[in-house]
Length: 262
Image 1 (tube, rainbow, N blue to C red):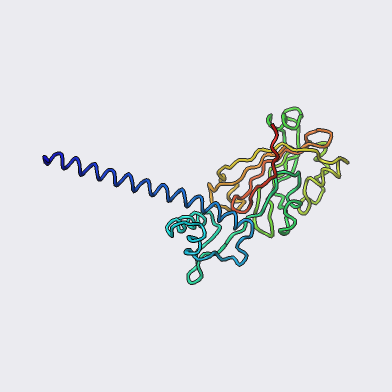
Image 2: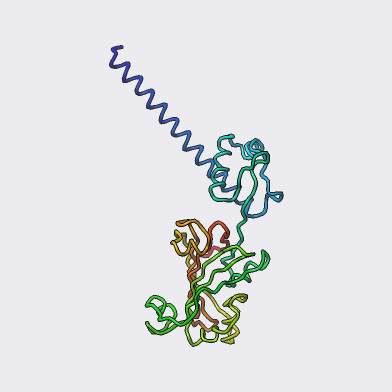
């Protein structure tokens, strides 16, 4: 075989080896992601009651994964702030996420009452001209004053969400002297209007925390937060509460019960 052919043949074998190595790395990364999803579920549902993970070799056996795959999966969970590795101890759970249901219309304190005490720090509250998108959603004239409220909400003292709320002023005026630090707005709205809340339209997406939000939530700048936009209506259909809620993504998990209909 001529030298040039041998060189080309060797180069071809090298390219094949590199491609195979990359394929194995991709496969291991995929498997690690799958394993991290399964372990995350156990963390969030209290599957590790003693706060400690099984040994890596046990996880490898239980999930039929290689030790490298298990290590990569634990690295993913460490990056999320859910677990950490302590010298002489091993991997332990270091963070807890709280469940927030999406299939019932409830205030935050009502939703999380089993997990501790929700308190509200009212940062801003008062009348403000309604921007056009807010006016449209609340069915008021653009520029009309609405009640604007900004609250930092804590669970057991830890920052959980930053809530920006707009309420029509004919209803919101009665909130000015209310105990917003310890009471959900939902309960107050039902008391003021004498009606039950009826339904809400929601949108949920992940956004990066801006400088202000990150500082208030004591989260890293640019950290991913869950943005819940919710427009709540009274039982008679009137829209009364437009909220933009930024949840710390490392402290909350959203869940719901869905029924299939065609």
